[in-house]
Amino acid sequence: MVTPRSFRTRVRLCALLCAFAAAAPAAAGSLDLPVRGAGLSFGNSQTFTGLRFNLRDRDLQSIRGVTVTLWAPAREPSGSIQGLSLGLAGTAADGIDGVTLNLLGCGADRVRGVAVGGLGAGCGEFTGIGLGGLGFGGDDLTGIVVGGLGVGGDRMTGIAVGGLGVGGQDMTGVFVGGLGVGGEDVTGVALGGLGVGGQDMTGVFVGGLGVGGEDVTGLIVGGLGAGGESLTGLALAGGGLRAERIAGLAACGAYLRGDVLAGVGIGAYNRFDVGVQGLQIGIVNYAAALQGVQLGLLNYAGNNRRGTRWLPLLNLHLGD
Image: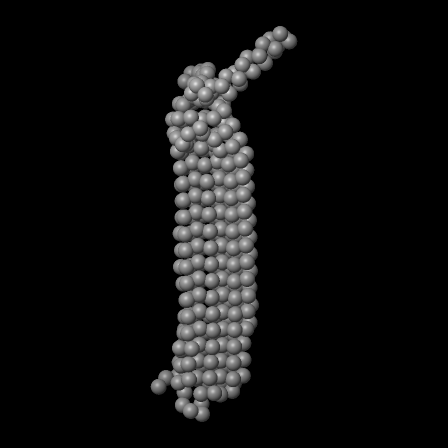
């Protein structure tokens, strides 16, 4: 039975332990209450297994269990945390394995598990599920990552969603940006509210306004337009499509323009200044050199004989 007196005694003991926890970091010490190799720690215990409370970590070595800190490390992050780590502003270590939840932010050289930062989170290498209120970033991100404003990383594998955008260098997986998605090498699926862009892109790319890249292969859909040095696959746009080389099927509502077409090109004004191998369908079709067929109101094949270069409805050149 808990008497009023015993209750007051416990409250005083708890208050004393909390006061020690706040003062301990200054002395780099801790008060540990071990039970069978684990237990309860108040203060800057550098190596501990159990439930640990500390104001601010310093020279951390190895913590296993549950650790609660109020502020970011006093020095450079060090050591490892395994288990559940809770913080107000910036739980950090060389390595974190498990679940880390922070009101403001969290970070580490390596995180494996679940990382949540109220404002944001950043790390060198991340594997797991990450959520940043404003943003999430790192050098190497693998798993599912969501940033309220954005997500960014040098290398990204998995699923990334950014309220405004997602950007990186080497990106493989599914990427969704409220405004846009951009990267150097993108493989997979990329959806951008306004646009999607990159250099070497392979997969499915959908941009509310447009899609652009140097070498784009796969399904390409731009609300207004799409373009690049090379478009290969199925390219669709409400407005226009333009690329130096287009291979596959390209269809748009207005202006289809390029140097070379190998496949099928459909557009109101359909023009290729080097050559066409395949089929052009449009109101006006223009090919500097045609190896194939043109269907349209007016068709031009520059390599036809005089008198057959401009023809209505149908024009063709099947070989010399």
